Amino acid sequence: MGYIKVAKCNGGDKMINTRKFKSKMVEKGYTYQSLAPKAKMTGYTLGQKVANKKKMTIQEANIFSEILGVSDFEFREIFLYNELQNATK
Image (cartoon, rainbow, N blue to C red; front, top):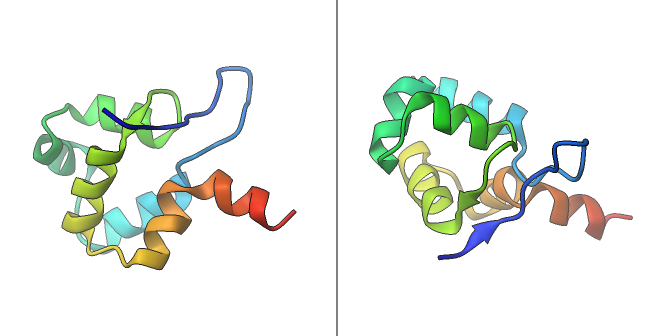
């Protein structure tokens, strides 16, 4: 199963753009508690993944992007956040 790299507890690189994910989630009328079961997880677990404290799989990212209507560009902005940051350096 593929994983998106996540932040280290000591403040490492962030792979999920938390602000953009939350913004898209709210725009579509979801909360962690209402969105999480669609990927077979709890709201707490989703919160941990969005905060870069737990790994998010590519499959989970794909599920959320479909539900939230995320474009290809937004997918890169939200789920590949660190890769974009590194590309602009």
